[in-house]
Length: 148
Image: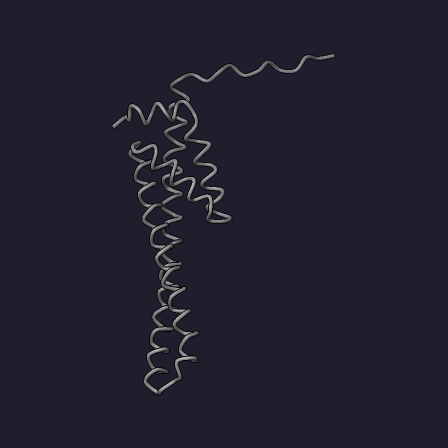
């Protein structure tokens, strides 16, 4: 009967700091990629919104009734709201990416990770990975004493 292998020794502090640096840089890059995808989504929603506004203006010029125009106005309002939400999320992801890369504004990183979790499915995975990474002691030490 053989014994199981011994448990690995706790990592050297330099190794933990190097891993924390690597993980934070990776997360920062992933937030940048997420911001890029949101930029594409924002451009698509903006194009649909511009097309809708153009079509609604043409229909109003022809003389559509107010009842017929109500559906177009509601669609324009919803697309405008969606465009605003995407823009806010884009700005938040850019700020979190910069904060992770600079090892500053830990609370912003926590808040951004929590809000990113609502972006199912990619945002959820990225947000949870960020929250788990930020809770490690080596990462907390990097935010307290950032290496320049």
